[in-house]
Length: 286
Image (cartoon, rainbow, N blue to C red; front, top):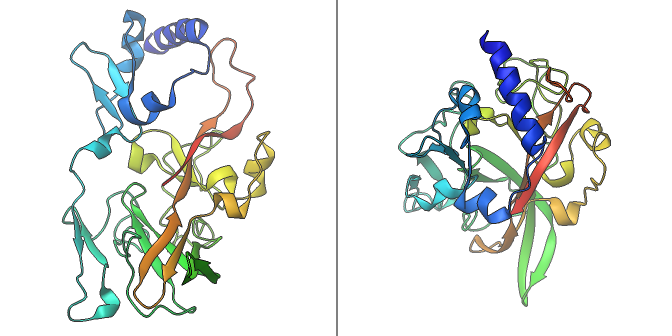
């Protein structure tokens, strides 16, 4: 049947290429790498659909890239100029003419569009302020809290950072569990919420991709213990911004995130005994 044909083709592909592919960074991120070029891939690739990461080419093959879509002008933000209320300066109210993103559950706090783009915040910031940045890539909002005063090129600045609970789902309360989409089955092949620090990103990417901070910073220890070579360091892996508090101008900052996928055994010859883990793909800083 179709399932046997799928397994036969998939086994052939794995025998040719192995479970992992070596791809140059520029192809993975920017220019794209092609796949589904061979005739034996037809059965598998027929299930794929175009999205912002995967494009079908004229010759029938597909191209994948994580950020090539950002070269097109498809992100329109409606930003408050702060004329009537300076505390709303830089606040994003709509994204592509929508007040809520479509990637999380209904019109919830997870999907409501708010915050700035991180280049400018309202003036007169104090250490009790909770700042928000909207990430169009993630389709969600990050909360920033005060860390410490810092001098930047002889200027007084205040360092705000993403707090440790920002990527924590609320699995104990179904009413607030808006990040738990249950689209990507976990490493044990179950449909359930991921633990603290890891978000199911499939609603955004159309692929089984998970979002975390680099090296699983502030994530549940389960994810770090399953992977060798993971050493989270707050100074290297957190998202932070140094802000001049009187004007709200960002002096320096780094937005860091990590994309992961799920590794688990599959019912295909030679791949029934692979490890179960949330596997880091790469992390980026912008």
